[in-house]
Image (spheres, one colour):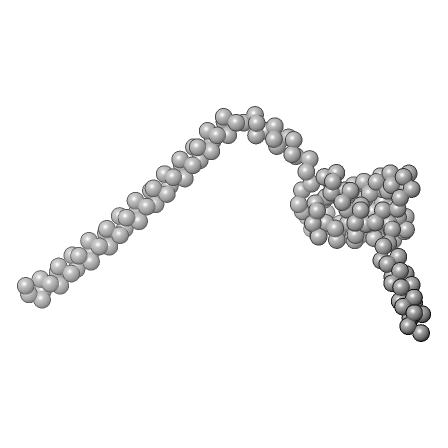
Amino acid sequence: MSEEEMARKKEYLRKWHLDHKEDQARKKKERRLKNIDETKARDKAYYDKNRDKILEYKREHDNRPRKGNRDWRVIIEKVKEELTYYTSLGIRPTLRTMHYRLYSKGIIHNTKSDYGSLSRKTTYAREQRKTFVSGTKGTRREEYYPRLDINCFADDTRNLKKMIKLEMGKDRDRNM
């Protein structure tokens, strides 16, 4: 076999190989699209079959709090309601107690960010500081939260510090 024939044969094999690869890629893409279409059809059939159950589930669970923007004015109103309940029992709740109370009622999530937001918003409400709320089309407006009593929450840290100081004083007296 001459070099020219070898070169032609190599070129033929190279072209065949490229065509074969393109053909395999095309078939793979067709299979993937077919699988996607089958999946969509299967999902649609499942939804059509269980439509009533799905809608009922969504209606039942639609009252859960959503992530993202919440109306904290409404939540502060709920805090006020809960505070009146606790004061009628003669209890001054901690912020943590209020957080878990609101979580158990499905008003907020049990996350660090929601706890921090509750702390910040109730501080604004107790101090009657202005807050800026985003409006539509990038506008902002000043807003006040419903008024809360400055001492509405029990502060465990103060009691803890007092207890530590008392204990430290007792230890000093014993050592002398």
